[in-house]
Length: 237
Image (cartoon, rainbow, N blue to C red):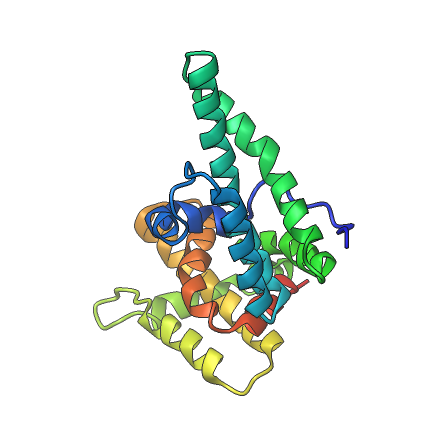
């Protein structure tokens, strides 16, 4: 089956952040990209992992995360070939160009090898939304900014006026454990994440969008255990 979905040129922000934060773990899990036969073995491993996963969003994250490491393998191979044949070292720009040229082809091939490749590809495109506040929540916060400020400065503040993230994180755990629908949980979690992003801005002086992306990336290990909620998050309109 050939997927009709055009894969993104680059990994979604979530996958990009996961790569940068866990490269050592990825290296231990998959081996040295320079090893002979690495690409074939990793492709097989990706397919085996994806077969065990129930939700398209889980499969999308898997093929993007591990597929990006296949792109690393091609860069390693190109570097070695240029060193041996031309007697020179690839520039950083050349390495980036090789990586960016190969990543979408790798993802397209992995999708084509999957029986549900179209569904997984569509979910991979939607995955861009995971680290962006849904427009409907942005509009809600804008309309009720005074209420949001009140929550931050009173409800979440201790006796000394210091704002604590603990009540918000506790709320996220309570939401995930509740009997609410995945869609309701997704909205509640994104709103809670927006409050954590407000706090992150004040403490670290990030731009708000960068703060929200950081918060959602840090919540991913928890949300990973609830793929139905992950799926609902990227489907919020």
